[in-house]
Image (cartoon, rainbow, N blue to C red; front, side, top):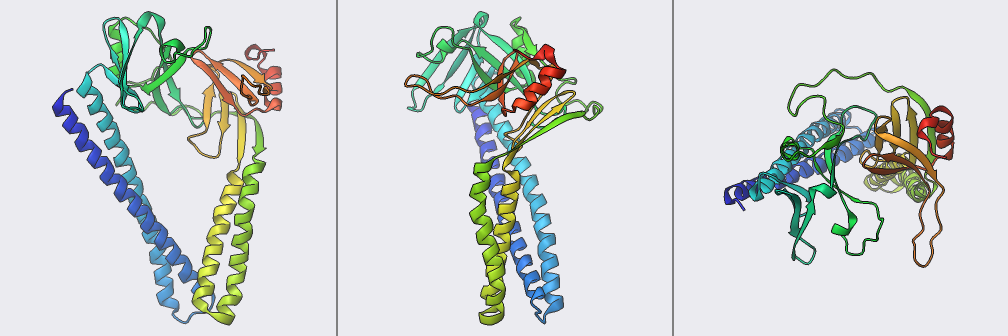
Length: 361
C-alpha cells in the first residue's frame, strides 16, 4: 500500500465526515425554524396581539429554513465529492489498476486474471483470481428517471462458482458493479478485453451534449400499495385528532399547549398524507423505454429499448421445503442480466400487441 495515498484517503475521510455533520446540523436547524414559523402562524390565527412581531418571526423562520436547506444541500454534495476522492485514493494506494467492488473489497487487474481481494466479515483476508477468458465486462448507464443522464457503472460478469462454493452447475453468473471510471476503461482496453454495452457520448469531464427530446409516453399503469397505505391511516387519524383537538384546548384551557398539539397534528397529517400518496408504484411505457417508478428515486429504474433484449411475464411460484417462494415480476432481459419490474399483466399484454418482437410467449 502507498502510505502517501493512504494519508490522502484518510484526509478526505475526515473532510467527508465534517461536511456530513454540517449538513445534518443545517437540516435539523431548518426543521426547527419551520416548526417555529408554524407556531407563530398558529398564534396569529388565534388572534395574538403581537401581530408584527409574530409575522416577522414567521417570515424569518421560513426564509432561514430555505437558506439552511440550500446550505445543507451544498454540504451534502461536498461530502459526496470527498467520499469519491477518498475511495479513489484508497484504490490507487493499492494499485493504479485497483477498483472498489464492495465494502473493503478491491478488484485488481493482473496479467491474465482479475484479482478480488479484501477482508470478509470475520476480518480474514480473501483472494480470488478470475481468468479474463471466463469473464465479460459491461458498461451500463443506471437511470432512475426517463432521461439520458444517470450514473455510469462497469459490471464484471463472473461465473458463480468463483464467489460461492455452494454454486450449482448451470447457475447464472454473478455481476459485480463498480464505478465507470476512465481509469478502469483504460485497464480493460490495455489488456485487449472487450467492453460491451453503452458508452458515454462524451468523455469524462467534457461539456454536456445537447439535451435529447423528452420521451413520449404511451401508457401508464398505477399500482397502489394497499399495505403501506393502511400503515399511514393511524398517523392520519391521530394527526387529525390533534389538529382539531388542539383548538378547544387553546381556547378553553391553555393557549401554549393547544398550539403545540395543533402543530404536531398538522405535521403528522402532512407526513401521513405524503406517505399515503407515495405508497404506490407506477409502470410507465414510453416509446423510448420503460420506467418502473417507485416511491423513491433510488428504487426507481428506467431502461431503454436499446438495452432491453426481451420482455416476459413471470406469474410467480409457490415455495417448497427446498425452494423459496418467488413473487410475480415483469422480466426485462438485458445482455448482462434480468431486471424484475412491477408485475402489471396489462402492461405485458400491451407490449405483446405493440412490440411483439420483444415479448416472449
